[in-house]
Image (cartoon, rainbow over all chains, first blue to last red; front, side, top):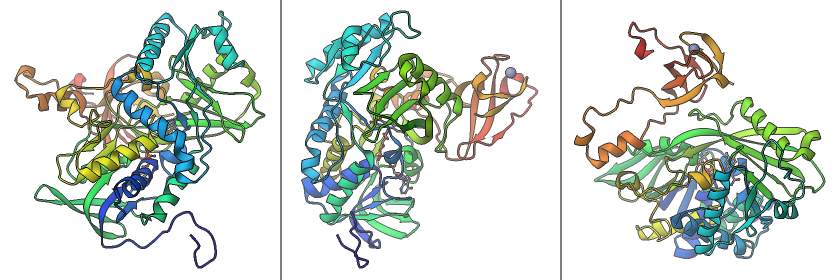
Length: 403
Length: 90
Ligand SMILES: Cc1cc2nc3c(=O)[nH]c(=O)nc-3n(C[C@H](O)[C@H](O)[C@H](O)COP(=O)(O)OP(=O)(O)OC[C@H]3O[C@@H](n4cnc5c(N)ncnc54)[C@H](O)[C@@H]3O)c2cc1C
Ligand SMILES: [Zn+2]
């Protein structure tokens, strides 16, 4: 698209219209991908994505881009593996380079309990058609020579799960690629437009109020990640999520030294090396509820202490930058994607620390849910009602600290 | 790092504390009488306000007592606990 200034832009920024068939609240990766699949898979193009800041400036801009599908339960394997398959064809589909790199992920085991949990997960993954291997310490060094596997180390490596098809992508380019393709099909991306109210009548959604005026909507799809409780609250809905800071950091640019992604739940840390060369690391959430996009330094300090034990070679690297996002955490570490008690109002939230990898999958399934007013089979288990029925999808083992 | 005012020990670093989430969530008086919906609300649903939040902290590496403060979840400003005569409500 070429503007009057002659500059090429990836997406149009039109003035909001008075009404749309579908309004998506939140222009993060999920909201943008949902708009893309609404247009592409369902022919619904009268869609606006409303973003209070700039497009994909929330968690989409802040995550550490780990992509994998080696979750324990069938329900999770279903949606995350669907996402991974879409990742594998995404650059062709979008006609855009997102720097998707299948460099594999190791999940280290440091105790017998970790070993048992890891082996069980490998077996569960295989039964679900997800590529997974159990590696002994020698095989771990073949995949990643810089991990310290000496058995007298502070965190001895007893083995690891390995998913070769896992990897990383360039988060910004993923958002831009989806937005570019959706915009070309007619979707409106409206930035600096905060939703401040949701109007309902007769048990059905009618419109949203925004800082850029009232916008009527046939359907409203919430996708506000860390702000999910706030947005749902506008429609009188209470969600079982808590918002927490989640931090990450990068080192200066280094020569390629780290060929894969290494995660360790036990010591709350994970590391990859971005295409540019910086080491990308993250930890677990800060304990308290917060909407402030920053966390405490002692979390970073502990995380670095663990990293240096696992990767002694990093001892001379410097922390260049740390930052935080606000993530929406559910009691069972699984997302909520589906219908709400309000007609025409849909919820996508609770992806917590691990929703980047799901971007294509959730976009696909959420679009299906909105278009047909019924969940896609892959998100059908992730209802709001599961907290009442008890049909939880407990992924704490595979997801709580991990991303 | 937060500086958290323990009512018994004074202001201490966050690293000394454990977090207990939303305050004033009472155990249901008659759990067996609750509907599934009500039980779910008790078990899984907590307030998640953007703004002032009454929450529990545990001074794990200090006096090991629990207390309640009101903290703003945007500014992180903490309003110290009220010293109630009833120690349990601190
Ligand atoms: C430090 C960090 C590391 C992470 N690492 C990984 C990882 O390695 N792998 C992984 O899979 N996941 C990871 N995640 C999680 C992942 O980033 C999120 O689960 C995912 O990005 C959430 O979906 P989203 O992209 O749509 O969210 P966001 O990008 O946060 O989008 C939500 C948008 O809604 C907007 N919004 C909120 N309220 C309103 C309103 N009232 N009106 C209009 N707009 C509104 C926000 O401004 C925001 O842009 C990480 C997260 C963080 C913070
Ligand atoms: Zn104390």
